[in-house]
Length: 347
Ligand SMILES: C[S@@+](CC[C@H](N)C(=O)[O-])C[C@H]1O[C@@H](n2cnc3c(N)ncnc32)[C@H](O)[C@@H]1O
Ligand code: SF4
Ligand code: SF4
Image (cartoon, rainbow, N blue to C red; front, side):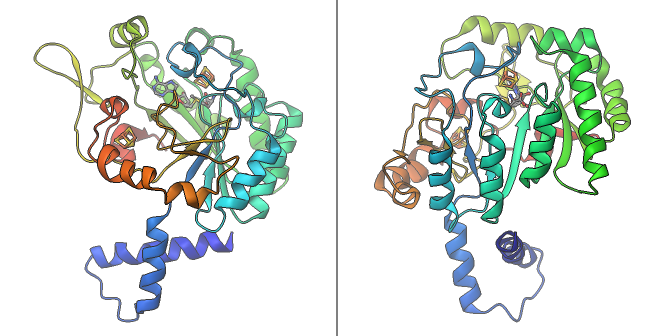
């Protein structure tokens, strides 16, 4: 935790410089430390599970064979990753293409990372947040948790999140907030999020009200993402026709061009400067979360050290030449806008 605070304090320095404030005491040593930190990943996404208990209509990852050998990451591999990255990165997420609560070691994993001073976040569908899971998470030291809820009524929610019982999710969230408060804990911070589509746009106000009633810390709307990096015309057509919302009032990644096709709102340099790698259940290191099929493997953490992969010619070349200039098929889906432009915070 202390490491996290220090890193954040240092990271504020360039912000103050940008704002024109004079920092007389900025020593060259501190500056060098910042430069070193700056070269490392912002945060690392660790895929603890590559399978899911649901089959959401909008989700690309459950509709395709991702080609992973392992459904779940082992605790040993997770531990190796944390030990490797702790000197260079103190923020991790434990969700990627599947449902992290399906991994039987997930609480132990979060505890391990947390004990090493890492800030840990989790994105979950919340359906498996039963009494045991709630206790496990409250004991684990998890810092942030976002729960996906794409509707405020049983009918809407269950028609998008196929396989998820609405009442179970609502009860799980209510009890989790209550149990956190009984323990007088302020973490994990609990967010509720909804991907806005034609199917649920009429429930935006009800979603906000439900989130407030449940007592979560934050609620926000997310923009729909339509993965067009691979041929899958049914999936793309379905999302474009029946899910995409063409409204400037809602967060969106796309505009409709003169030919009537969806186009990204803007196309600049790589928005993440390729400093948010992903490590899959198989240990493959991928450049960013848009590479769900693992087509740009930059190394494998099972038999390589993270820093050796990060500093390899392959990774450096990738950062400089391919990704920064958005030369890959996956980059056509990736918007360089900041978080607030593609998502809308309700409270
Ligand atoms: C792939 S899921 C993995 C974590 C967990 N299973 C869940 O649903 O929260 C990660 C996030 O992606 C979101 N998501 C899935 N398909 C999406 C799409 N087409 N556009 C935008 N977000 C999407 C989900 O709502 C979820 O918040
Ligand atoms: S719960 Fe998450 S991973 Fe599972 S299908 Fe839905 S969006 Fe995809
Ligand atoms: S998809 Fe391309 S542009 Fe987007 S973060 Fe990844 S490498 Fe950068």
